[in-house]
Image (cartoon, rainbow over all chains, first blue to last red; front, top):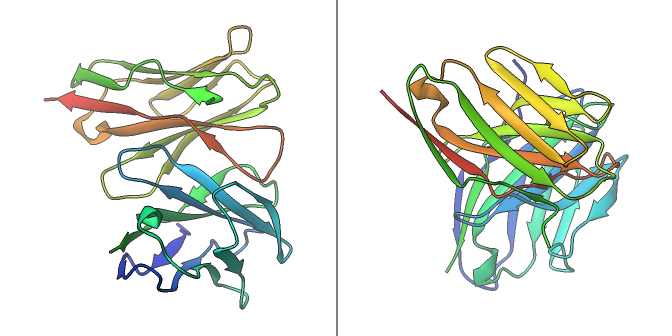
Amino acid sequence: EPEVTQTPSHQVTQMGQEVILRCVPISNHLYFYWYRQILGQKVEFLVSFYNNEISEKSEIFDDQFSVERPDGSNFTLKIRSTKLEDSAMYFCASSDQFGETQYFGPGTRLLVL
Amino acid sequence: GESVGLHLPTLSVQEGDNSIINCAYSNSASDYFIWYKQESGKGPQFIIDIRSNMDKRQGQRVTVLLNKTVKHLSLQIAATQPGDSAVYFCAENEGSNYKLTFGKGTLLTVNP
């Protein structure tokens, strides 16, 4: 069964450093998303991406964040200068042409020290 | 404030019993709802969905009920098994294809 994959599974970084989280969405999907989940809290929407541009973004997704689809398979989330409060699980998701059922990857656990 | 919330943060049931997990939403414009299961250290796993033009949908051992009058969503799990132990989230799509809004989650514990 096709699934969303994410790398790395864990990332530890120093405050102020740049991180890039990588995702490979399900191959025939057209809509891509990033969410985050701070430990013990609910899943929060960050950004959605369709047709090579951002469709919608939340207040969390400020100028420190960016997304890119560098090729036909990868979808990345970059945090330019990490802050302590960026520590969370980051989930990538994708959905099919109907853009509704979103399938999630296993997540990247980011720890900013 | 939150547009999606859960009545019960924890639910403990005996193996073989039926489980009911509830969710309230406040956005009447929401037209699509999903239940996800999240096991420890993993991503949300799709369980079942329902559109606003339906009030009930059944899957394998799971049923989702939607009451638009009181803006309430529930997930029923029949013959609950230890493998069902997880956090369950409801999520809503507010009329767009571009994001889901999640509730807080309910921790379901199944006792053998």
